[in-house]
Structures are given as C-alpha cells and as structure tokens.
Amino acid sequence: MTAAVDDVMTEEAVHARTWLSEHGLPTGREEDWRYTPVAEVRRRLDEMPEAPAPARSVTGDDVDRLAGRHGAVRIVHVDGVHVPELSDGALPAGLWVGTTHNLSARVRLQLTTPAGDPPDGFEALNRSASQDVLYLLVADDADLREPVHVVHVSTGASASHPRLVVDVGVGGRIHLVESHVSLDGGGFTNASTTVRLSARSHADVHRVQDQATDAVHVGRLELHHDAGAHASVTALSRGGAISRLTTVALLREPEASCTVTALLAPGIGARHDDAVTVDHIASHCTSDLTVRSVVPERARVTSSGHAIVRPGTVATVAHQRTDSLVLHPSGQADSRPWLEIFADDVRANHGSATGRIDDDALFYLRSRGIPRAEARDVLVGAFARTLVERIEPPSLRDQVAGWFGPEGTA
Image 1 (cartoon, one colour):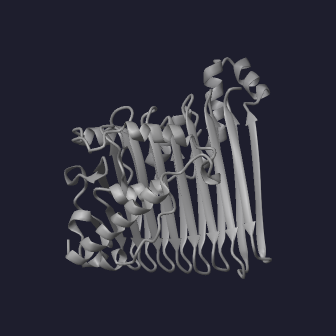
Image 2: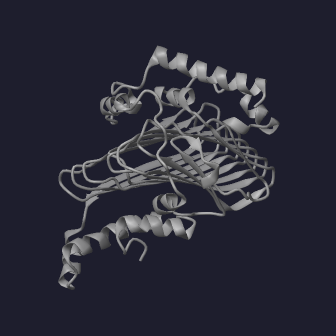
Image 3: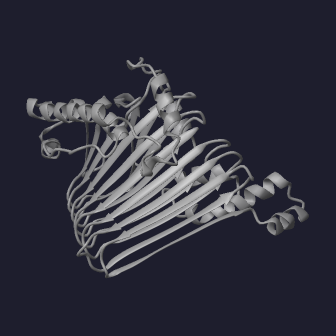
C-alpha cells in the first residue's frame, strides 16, 4: 500500500473516531432509531471484548453449510478480515478484487475522495474499526451477470465490522450476493456496504442476513447513482435477536432508478428493523419499495420507507408498499411511510397492510387432512412467494424458500 493511500485511510479512520467521540452512538430519542432497541444493542456491544480475539477456525465446509454457494466466484471474510484460502482465486474478466492490505493505484482515486462525516455512530464505528476493507471494482462495460458471492462469517469471538466497497464502471453490470452468517451463537456485527454506480451502470444486490438467533446485526447499505444508473436491491433477513438494516439510495443524476425489495422473517421474540431512504436529488428519477414481513410470537418488525424529492426536480416517481403477516397475537408490525416532497411534478404513493392468517383458508386446508402446523406453513409460504420468486440465482431462491417451509415457492 502506498504512503498516500495509507494516509487517506488513516485520516478517514481518525476522522470517524473523532466524530464518534463527539456524537456517540444513536439513541432511542432520535427519530430514525426510536423503534430500534438501541440500549440493548449498546449493551451487547459493550459486552464484546475490547481487543479482537483470535478468529475461530473456519473451513470451506463451514462456509458451504452456512452460506451456500451462489455464484461464479466466492470471496470470504471472517470477523471482518479477508481469508484468501477460503476465497476463489480465479476472477471473471472485468472484476478486480482488493483489500486494505493489497491496494493498487487503480483504487487511489476512490480513496483520495474524502468520505465526509459519518451519517451515524454505527457507521463511524465501522469506519474507525474495520480491519480489512474489501473492494470490488467492475470495469467499464463489463457484464458480470453471474453472481459474485461475498460471505461475511462472524465467529462470535469479538465484534465484527465488515466493510465492502463496490465501484461499478461506466456501463458496467454486477450481480452481488452478500451473505452475513454466524459460525456460533452470539456475536455482534456492524456491517457497511457502499455501491458506487457510474453512468449507465447496473447493480443487482441480494443481501442475506442469516446469523445466529442470538446475534446482534447492524447493517448499512448505501448506493450512489450517476446518470442513468439502476440498482435492484433485495434484502433478506432471518437471523439475529436484534437486526437492523439501513438502506440509502442517492439518485444524484438524471434518469437514475432504484428498486428495493425486503423480506423479513425474524425468529420468535426477535426485533427486526428495515429502514429505507431514497433521495431523489435529480430529475427524471424513479424508486420503488416493497416490503413483506412474517412476524411470529413475541417478535416485532418495523418497516420505514422515506422518500425525499428535492426542490426543482421534475418527472419524479416514488412508490412504496409494505405488508405484514402477524402469526401470533403477541407479534407486532409497525409501518412508517414518510414522503418529503418539495416539488410539483411528482407521482408518489404508499400503501400498508397488516393482517393475520386467514381462518377460512386455514380451516379449508385442515379439512383436507393437512396438519395445522403444515397448513400454516403453506399459507405463510404463499404470502412470501411473491417476493421469493424474484430472487436470483435459483440456489439462493431455494435457500430462502426453505425459511418458509416446503411450500415457499410452490
């Protein structure tokens, strides 16, 4: 790593650390975080060892079992550190992969652009504590339709701060599958992914959070769109006692578009938050948000959709839809649509519905000799199927369908 690059990275980490010392982590008094059990998140973070513990041994079989294989190439991080021996060495044409420790001149331009102030304390913590940032660079006009699978494994030995930066060149295309999994129980993951989309580029991003049921996961996905760029994001969340994903799409130049789909399936007693902000900074931009949640006993899910339309923009389209299926009276689903519109030429709408399993449908299936638990799985699978069927590649679609029983994609 060159001294100039090292200086920039050190400067960013120092700035983030200073910002964190001045502002701290979020609190429940902040509007963006008031549905997240921040006090419990902070307590769990405080319980983690201050110094990183030695990473537990992780094998290729572990990665296969926990995350599967969903693409032409797989890249593995363990507790936020790249593990070459678990990663594929042969890369498709048009893709360059590097980490903090082997940066080349090809990424100096990106690194010498200051990141600015962190948007919140968890992002500041990630920037200051990340041990080994992973960089994916897609060449201009490269067409990487076969998925690139990035797997983040948490061993639970210490807090993990994985950080991924993806830069898609002009006219380039990438299909990214990013999996967050746990080797053992517990653990704290504070993850950050940034996708930079150059003009006319395209990114399909499937983000899978399937960590241990007692883990804590805080994640941020930020997308920067240049002119004519499109991103399609599918966020899939099952694991974790507490899980929060913040997705931010910045439509900075005309003709940019973003589609965000989220499917949340927390375990019994878990708390899952999904917060999406799409900022229509330029004219002629389009966004679409669809969220579905399956809420079991004592679980709580919050879905926040925030669309901003800036003054002076024209021909803006912004749609939101949130649906929740609550499986038990003790489950709770909250929907928070939020439209901030400062322009006139806008087509925007939002809709939300929360319901329970249809008793008539359940009675019908049971009258056909189907046991109650299996009948419920059929109805839950039917609710999730609309979103599950959109998942690519098929191997990931089958994995997620299994979250909802054998009828998930029937």
